[in-house]
Image (tube, rainbow, N blue to C red; front, side, top):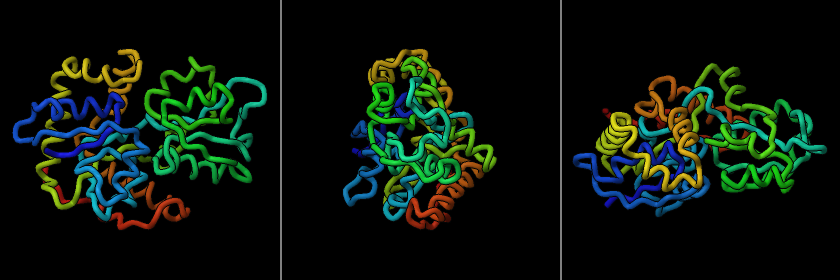
Length: 285
């Protein structure tokens, strides 16, 4: 039995569907813990974390002592970055400088979204933002709408639904990153404990991705059971955006994106220094 932790987001349940349902020859049966990204980011920093986990690339500096980055199963891409939102009403910030001193909700302080926000805000918010409030990602848009926070940093399917909450986009941080670096956005990573057979795990994971691509309708009942009242159309749009060529293999461009993010963040004092050469774990798939 192999302990695996990942979120209920459609891209994660799509990626792991075949493995969870024992459809990958040779793959051990998984004991799955479904957990928000803020929780999985914390789990891999401790002594007794899962064997395999989906985490933010931003959490890698805390994970690398015990875990290796796998070259498949993750979420990288273009046009899929986090958005910074505010309410469409009087008194809400309507431009970047208006965030100075404001309360901003984020999905995790060890998320790629948060790192991008901090790197962007250092250049665009004179005096800096005020209080940072960590909320589960599905609670952020209601909090912005209801005035509990002044702005919110959202990820995943929120880019398709934020209009329904009466919110405006202040900035697409993915577009900012791509324009600034020319690189894709490294959002979610799959890591496995270093003392396991990493090549075998990577092979099973890639096989699970490929199975779901060959049979795209088959995983949908499983995906929708975990999709938190999301419509099938939004779930499919989510999968189409976040499951792509980088999911099958991160590739040279993906490794450079991860190193660029963590290098900049370490230089800004936002994450610990890490051996970025350790990202390129020798896994033959």
